[in-house]
Length: 223
Image 1 (cartoon, one colour):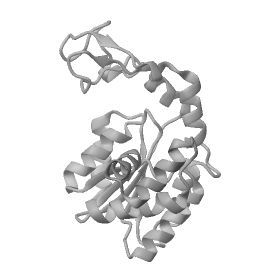
Image 2: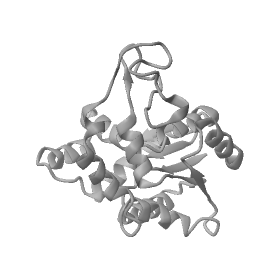
Image 3: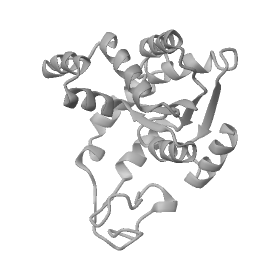
Image 4: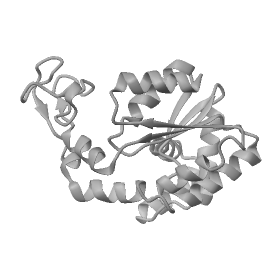
């Protein structure tokens, strides 16, 4: 099964993506990891990408798309879940064209819906446990609200990541994601408008629901 997943930072996209990966035994491919691995391995595409990154410039789609495709082919022999790409309408169109040209079928696109203000509160409410960062604690989510200043799971000390408290940085990321014309939501809607006619599903999920409820709905609709 080949899947693209969309969702704003704070929507639980990573959690749901991990559940899908485990259920279907497919590769969870994150866009940031693709760049890091190509650069670390010194591939031709990695060297070209690094030259742009070192100059503080965005890596052009002519390099990014082949990188993504190569990674999907190498790691996704049993299927893949693509997370964090495409980020805009142009990338969505170019990725679709590249998948078609490579004969790679797209089975499903998942969009996790969450109001912008709720997403920001969730990000700013995240707390990290000193004993285990994977212990879920968030002061703005009732189901995983910590007990005061200690971890709800183990009682360890809690802290907040500096970037989670940077409203300007969060707003900039969300400006890109919630742009439904040519931003990330625009990319999602590009696939939504083709779904069915092109043979793949488009699944919308309410990200404000409890994680187990979202999981149950998602896995039920994936089949």
